Image (cartoon, rainbow, N blue to C red; front, side, top):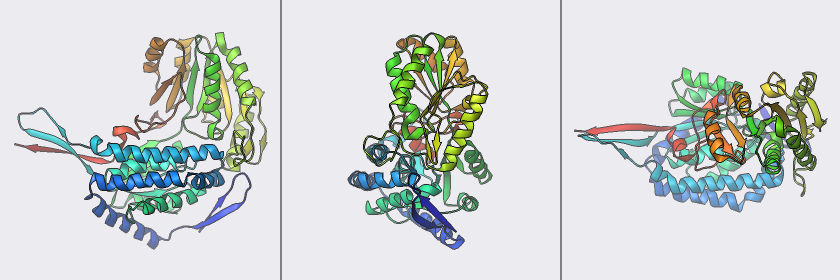
Length: 450
């Protein structure tokens, strides 16, 4: 079986990747087991030296790797290069912080008692195409710094990125088997999960994919972390700075052509400022330039696949039939979908209920801040939210009422190595990043000495 990598902008076939046979996959799994036995006995400093070198390699090759990202999935080249830089920073962060994060914890008992953090084995990762380097290094850097090894099944359209990451780990001096990418089909996933060496599964992807993989993890008694879909609320209150809110709204909704779990998707605006916000938001969206993602001055490239643009067109058509009003955009040309804004989207509308994965922004008008919070929480997803108000005291109170894993006030929702990241409800469970993320796949072992 062959998987083709296709440039979404030019439709050029970039490469063909052969799926592993059953025997080849078994060899990869055996190599993971061998690598883990070695890596778990190395020191933090030994791993940190290699992880620092990994970061340096990423920075040195950021233009080359950025070009690869853009070629495989279509984001504009500046975003691709920034993604590589962010991934390198995450490698540095865990190289510097992992040992402190995983130090022994002592308890106040009449006998000696402590918890120690032991690496647990191989982490099997199923990662998406929209951030093909960041999503991988986000979990892999802490996992490997903790002494675990990892097996990566990347999305089928970014296998070139997966192979490039594996090559970088080898170049940095990590032994074979510490980081492995595997080109496999869906029906080979369970055989990896069932392997004795695999101690945990991390997945970033759709709700459906998460449900399927989580059930397999449960079947084989393996811990899992799921970062799934999102339909993030962006709440604009009466006293918000409209100009700044609209500027960040445009960035949040339209970055990566709207293809991010943490893109703002439901713009919930109080009636008092709704007309003004809609006007400024529309103006800023209209300024975006869509085209060749490698070309300077372009703000948005194509969607990663034509079928994604097709789905978005169908969602837009149904939304308009259900009463939404189009303000601008709405046209599709192959993988390209024009930056689009629709208004008067109620909570029963498909554009409110479903995750919209593309450059389509929706405005929902509400009476006041109380209704705004209720409307934001009235959803199956709970990944992140943003609140815009000049009253920071009120913002703190309202943030506590939001049902989401992350709430940002007067700023862009984003992930940060220093801060735990993850969702609730159908957006998943578990956390990545910070000290909490590195501990997700550790054996937290209690030791009691009388």
